[in-house]
Length: 505
Image (cartoon, helix red, strand yellow):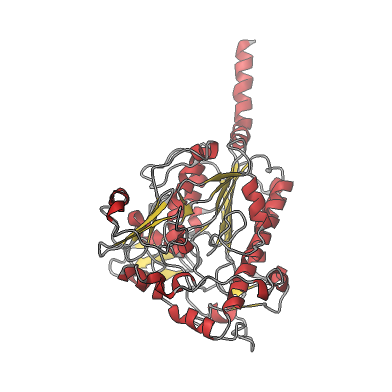
């Protein structure tokens, strides 16, 4: 009987090995939101009422990292860092004018690692940077890009959006009533149904996948990435989200002209970039309206996340799915006289980060220890029992899922494209400029970062402690886009000087 039993088990193993291994590993729902600062309910960054019920309920289902910060204060390098677990000082991807794949053809990203370790990897929307050439299909089993037709009259014909369909320029454009640094810097209500907005189509793809898990033709666990573009400009939203924020209740950041007096020159230059936009917005009386539309865009994104979460909850995967939600960086709405991203202050670096994992940690947990978005990759590796990836800059956050009060010595770094670096700890932010100058803020007494303590000799040990985390041999900037010829049909890059061809699919 024993030989027959062994033979039966061997035969059974041939039929059941993949499904059993698939159920042993959790699924992953990977939610990205663009340009979302800390103006969400569970972070309390906005002084008034902000309507984010779905983000708040997700935070209630797991751990919200309330001191989480982006690796770079602009889209492309931040997302490349999130998806590789490496800071820009390791990748050389410092701004939006780089493609990571032709510069780092062997870079192991989150979707690649999951796909090569038995996951069905699918995605939609903005995960990597959204312009052409940033999201190689080779990483995914399937990826549905966003159409970017909400403002197709701007994007159609642009080589960064070769797939965007033609759309007539509306007579009402700009909907905001003023022209700013680019046509993208606009806000208003489009004359279309909510279901026709780009982000609605993105959410629908994820929802359709979750509603049809039994028809996907594989027993592999899934890694589903869904990237919502709002509240990135333009702030085009359905009217009902605008109605959540009466104009007379909008809270405007306090204008303190002397706020930059103790900031080193490089920091003032960062604040003054695109300062003409803020000046024009204020002079025309549109500051409250602009903030109203940013808030409405947040609530629109929140509603879409809620629809995806509802579909997951109703699916067969609801009890075995790790959910990660993050934003690539924040956004200034007038603080320190700035109207954009790209700075190293709290408004640009602090972002939502929520992790909800089956049977790991408790509910409604808040972790105030510093966390970086580069920590997401090693965290998912541990939660999903994948082989480790060597030389990552991030560390697993699982210990803080089980004990949110656990002390963390390692700070969260944010690297600006000029090489300036923010070092964020539990209580302090230090900013090191390439000139050798510093900023230092104590968040216990100065959460708005208005009093620079860097020159106070009583705090020299804090500066010394921050200095040791500054990368000593940062990578040189990667080759810019203009160094390559990109073929979006075949998804190849050809290096102009060497003729080398890099494949992306």
